[in-house]
Image (cartoon, rainbow, N blue to C red; front, side, top):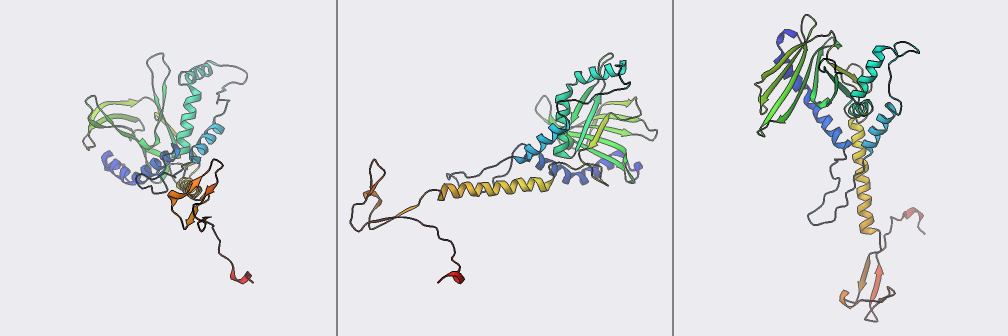
Length: 300
C-alpha cells in the first residue's frame, strides 16, 4: 500500500485486517485466566457438573519461567570490567524492576505471540521507564515488500474520563519520509472517528520508541506464534468437556440406583445398621445393573 494514501486510511485498513487477531487474542487471554465457557448445559436449579481445568495457564507460566529463570540477562561491554555504561544499564534495570517486568513481557508473548515494550524517557538525570504494552492494543503497519520495515505503530484502547464518559485514546508512532519518528497522542469522545491531538513530538533517535519481537518464529508474518494458539485452547476446552461429563456420570451413576417392587417408598424402613426392612413378604428391592452389549458371535 503506498504511504501517500494517508495515515487515516492506513488505520482503517489496519483495523479491518486486525479484527480477527483481536478476537483470537481475547480468546487466548480468556483461556489463560481460566474463563472457559461451561461445556455442559445446566438448567436452572440443577446441580452444576461443569469442571474447568486450566492447562493453558500452566503452559504459559512454565514457558515464561524457563525463559527468565533465576538468572536475569546482563550486559557485558568489556570482559572482566564493569564499565560506566554497564553500571547505568544495571541501575536502569533495577529502576524498572527487571525480574517482574521481564516475567510480564514473557507472559504477553506466550499468550499473544508478540511482545511490545515502549521506552518513555525520564526527566533529566532520571532513567527511562519501560512500559510493557498489551499486545492487543498495538497494530503495526509495514512495507508490504519487507515485513522488517515498519512504517507505523498504532497503540489504541478505550477508557473513561473523569466524568465517566467513554473515550478512545491512541498514540501514533510514525516514521516519516526523512526517517524520523513522529509521535502523536490523540483522544476521541466515545468510539468516534474524530480525534483531537493532545501532544506531538519528534523522537530524537534513529530507532523507534517501541521494541518488539516474536514469541516464536512465524515465517512470512509480522506477528509471532503464541504458546496458546487456537488449537491449544481448543484442546483445553475438549479436556474440560470430558472431565465435566465424567463428573456428571460419577454423580449420577457412581452409587447403586435402587428400585423397588410391590411396595411404597414410605413403607421402607432403614435400621441403624443400614439394613432395609421391607414391609411385605412379596416386596423386592434391587439395584439397577448396567449391562454392556453382548457379542452374539461369542454366545453359546
